[in-house]
Image 1 (cartoon, rainbow, N blue to C red):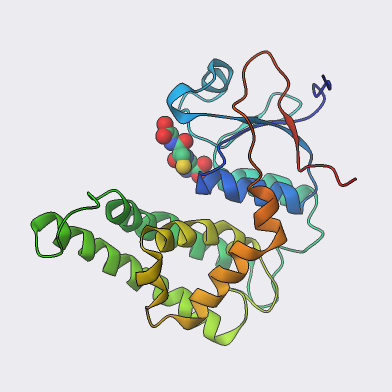
Image 2 (cartoon, helix red, strand yellow):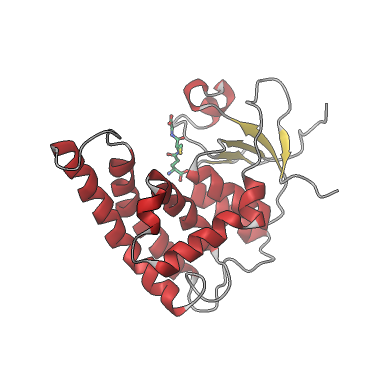
Length: 228
Ligand SMILES: N[C@@H](CCC(=O)N[C@@H](CS)C(=O)NCC(=O)O)C(=O)O
């Protein structure tokens, strides 16, 4: 078994959009880690000991520094190495990107969760169904800002991908996947094309590789996977 002890450790969960964006930034910065795949109903003790709030992702640097907010993991990686200039888009400052990301992480994500986790079989004209539609529509209002930006440029802040694109797209994907046919029938053509491009991109596909659950004291897997 390979000895990974000199690498930062990333506790990750494949399907978590927060972990996805952390992995996307780690990949882009070519920051190699030891990835430990977590199952949320059975979190590793080592992860909880490092970060008692026990959400993924958690990154533990070589010196023991714990970073347990996905956006902070992204910034940590990209501030060390940012070959694709994700922190320096053509049409905005880093702060502009962080402001947009916080609008999506805040109000949009709250409506997304209320929409996604409402009972699936609720009828549209029932109380629960109405609530579900209300949150779906409120989430769409938040997405109007993205559609508007994408009408002007191919990506959110210019014609190159930036931090904002990879921080936000995993959540739009989650929203779209609740009812993909409905989402794709909405009058948001630019957003639909942007999301499709993201989901099909090599970067996204490679950050979605499947790994077995990590079990202590085994070594995790090297992430990003090394090119042959
Ligand atoms: N603000 C945190 C949120 C992370 C988060 O909520 N992750 C979810 C999974 S998508 C989680 O770990 N939830 C804990 C649980 O389900 O037990 C971040 O950006 O890293």
